[in-house]
Amino acid sequence: MLEKMNAFLGKWMPLLTPISVLIGVLLSDILHHVSFLIPWIFAMMTFIGSLTSNLKSVKYTITHPLSLLLTLAILHILTPLWAFGIGHLFFQNDPYTITGLTLAVVIPTGITSVIWVSLYKGNIALTLAIILLDTLLSPFLVPLSMSLFVGETVQLEVWGMMKGLLGMIVLPSIFGMMVNQFSVEKAKKWNHTLSPFSKIGLALVVSINSSVVAPYLRNIDKKFLQVALTVFVIALSGYFFAWILGVVTKRSKEETIAMIYSGGMRNISAGAVLAVSFFPPAVAVPVVIGMLFQQILAALYGYFIKLVYEKPVVGKIKEGKIS
Image 1: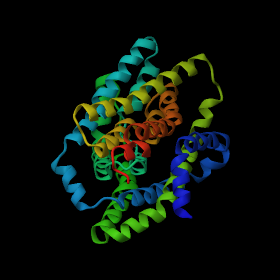
Image 2: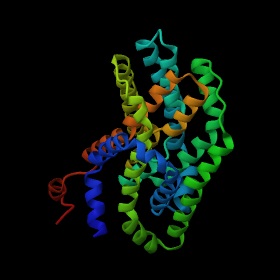
Image 3: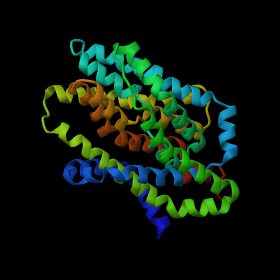
């Protein structure tokens, strides 16, 4: 039953994600009260995703760091330059929107990327390494990036971010990899059993996070739609840049999938907190709008990944791979 549920959820993930966003917006008055559950759901999802990795795979990632470095370059050089350029092209007389567009892409990679990478059988160890390193560096990279691009000084709550990282990523990842390290069979069994709950958890996280967006959707005007379209294009490009760079540098399929999601996703929740805490309200709009698109685009790129990397059964029969 669980295997059938997992297959069903995996098949309909591209549709489940936008439905979750819609539910979050419609039920915002209820769902924002359960936001305290997000760290626990994240921890569960990270643990399940880590069951397919072990210390050997982590060692390989550390000793072969090109994919990791390429993804960091996408996160903190290529995409920010792209966002900054587009902002100046379409909103040259609106410094707040330019600042918001830039802030939306200089924040660290999204923690949920590990769930999508796990879903599409990418390199989990590489994804975890990117998340850990990027989040640890974010107290230095985010203020530096904002200073370079828009001349703003940003202060981050370092300990709060580190504590969240420890509970949602570090400890669950270690536990999951330890299970795999000492009992591969048990790790496979647990992964098969728990996978559908990981997908359900992702839908819950998307719904709860989307409930935060609701207040920003009450006054939709021409300016809002222009900003939303721009955010959509920038967010779409992040995944695309990572995919192209992975192909050009001849990364493996698993590494490329990890790069696509790690390079395309952002920790929008952290970005929204920064925008509201340290900038005028107008700066927060592009950042929060990004929350609306991120999971939908992740599902869309999952569909593209299946089209590109999963050959039809008929093709495999013709190649003699299936008798």
